[in-house]
Length: 392
Image (cartoon, rainbow, N blue to C red; front, top):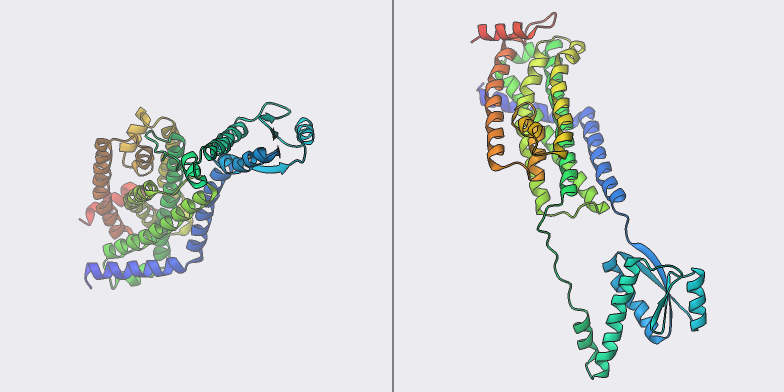
């Protein structure tokens, strides 16, 4: 059987088994719920919503002003309810008692205390609109023409600067997603290797396919499932943030998702090689925790570094860790999303990471090939390296 066909068969088996696995389904659901909760919380805690006001009105023009304020209030982040009064004395009494936030009577706006800026702005804008329309009608202008003149379309607002808080929040979620997913899929590689080795299934598999094809298919299949999990989680998080009002979905968010997926693929290739080594040097599931802990701690360190990077994305620590291959899959996307990584730095980071992958994957394949059939006590790394050199 050719290497390519064997790799494809193993990858197909891994995808099928893991998609049906309850562990995969639960981990996907839990991760998605975490990201959705963050998206909802960002909107609910960061957006207080419009203020509610009740205004009184007495007289024909005052009622028109109050009704017009309903529409203008949206532009001032105010939600306005109108209460009509038959007489001026009643409207004044309601304003004095605080039954209404303000009362429009004749040429005045009455209130017990100083008017909130959003309410005053809405009422003044409505007053200019109503009184201006009355003046134009007095000059013989048609009502429809007067309305168009007094309520032209709003100017389009385009922000030229950067929304640092918004970018920081998106970068934080991106680093969290990468961290969680790299650990989940990395441990899946290590666990899969140990399970096949401890159950002796690997001996049957290696009678039909070469060991490197077995490892390549396992990494490819688990990576595809991990990529699918990441896409589903990211889409769910973006949808939750959009529904809660935390963000307005646009083309830039598709770009952020592309950045996250791209760096995940590279990071997975790097850490899949490390986790495969952590899995193949032991023969029992109980020993895998100790062998994989150093790799996991490197990922934890990369995630923890992301926090100071969020505060100072141009600092020395940020630049160094975004170039270091072991931490760049988490740190560089943070800087790229925030717009603080130059093209030269991104290219350098990619070059170093690809070079590290090119070195680690063949080395991991040799270690896997020489150690996958060894049973007994866990191998030390230098013993595994010595055995790998002997197989060259």
